[in-house]
Length: 283
Image (cartoon, rainbow, N blue to C red; front, side, top):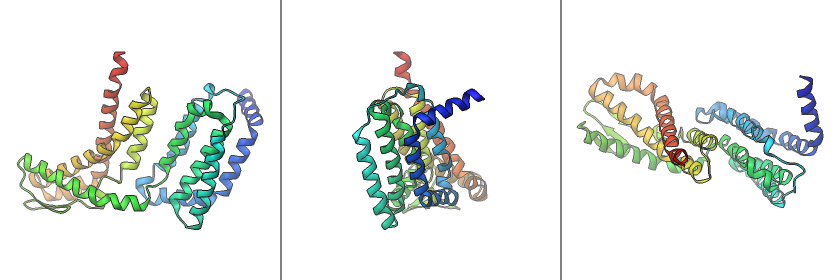
């Protein structure tokens, strides 16, 4: 125990200045962090935000032995720090939450890049990039993408129902069955689970895949995977209402809908990740 505390003390003594600056940044931005935590509590879609910072710290910690000091400071870090500080000022003045939160991550990243240097930062960059997943999607992007995804999900679901012989008629984002009306509402667009799935896809790719291209492919694949998983949910709900009962669709299947989307999407991500690892195993 004394040995561990001694190592911690020695580390803090040798690197006290970046930690002091980081502490001052956090203290200065307590109102921003409080609002962010409130969003995590208020909106279940972003409750994963509580895990992002601990995971980022872990990702940085696991690379600690690869870092070498003293390191040559990077002026790019100063540039990112200044850009983040300007964004923080304008974001706070305009009460634009996404800008202030993004700027906070940019400030922390710039400080770390300056102190660690380019060589060290290349080894730990993902731990800072991962912090972005704690920030909720901007409302303007969320609501502009919701309706197109609702219409797309309802159209594909309706076509699949016709393919398997289930009679249905679609009007906009509403699918009419024989004795049931399935409305693809905003909550059913697939966007709700997208942020969490993108975080999982990025983390899974970083931890399990080598190289640069395959983790990026897995990360961006989470977008169509979230859409596919949502369509699977809608399809099962419609089949349940048609083949069994409307009560089953309204009560049991609807209650499990969110879990069904998340679990099915997670399974697809793992399978696709295993597929991307095949070239590595062959080599």
